Amino acid sequence: MALVAKRGVKRGEEVTNTYGPHHSNMTREERRGRLREDYKFECGCEACRGGYPTLEKMQQVGSQKKKKTKTFE
Image: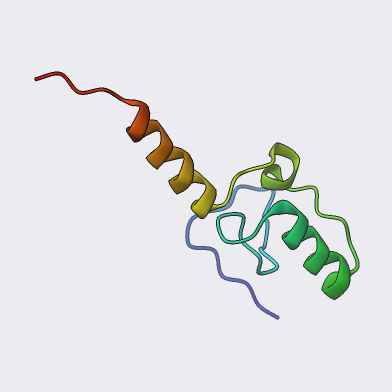
């Protein structure tokens, strides 16, 4: 396997790789379950540690906030 960087990488800088499931498309439980089943490890990425929401959840929260906002004319 060969990896090609899209930018310069400094000596000692961490290089990461995605295993497929993206936090904007799957819940933490779905991602962790797939990674556990397919790759046999428990994910500890920033999105999993921080409980990042899915895109769908962010859109729901955004539309709820719009409904609560009053406009004055």
